[in-house]
Length: 235
Image (cartoon, rainbow, N blue to C red; front, top):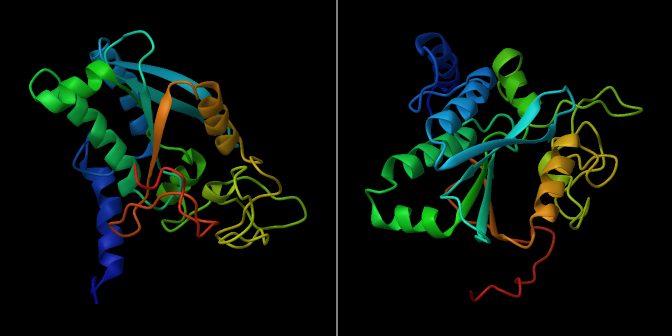
């Protein structure tokens, strides 16, 4: 038994929102706070961070992206997203922590300074904003998006299984009521479409893509729908 009283742990997570005033790197933050933080951290660090909007969610929330790095021409980039699955609160918290560490150690720590001088990091703090909000307001263990599904009363799609890459094959479900529902079509979700479009529009510079989840302490790499090793496995 890893957690003897899960209910008390969950309740303590919600309590943090009442204790904290403003954004905190040590407590979980709701979406309203994270959204304000993206603006604040960019405004306070204009030489290292810029904020842009890459789309909107099903419920109309703006999807904000942070670009972290010293300005420079033709820089290679690493894309990192958090918050695919709404209930995995530690994931968005990690993206916020990474941005703080990057900015706070630049000019003081040689590795991070070199990284930000030579690379750009695209950081998407919360992909599934609608679902994340729902975990704060309605149901803590919600996982999917909050889009409606034609012909079903079940809500949401698993955004992690909605991309046009081995879509709806191994590990995905065609049942809208399942937590691994792949959606009505590849990139049917506005969140997935916005993310995929950004990647496609920046393929020439993006050299690596990291997506942060909370399950286990593992490094997983493509492809979950195939047992074959990728061509760059040795690398």
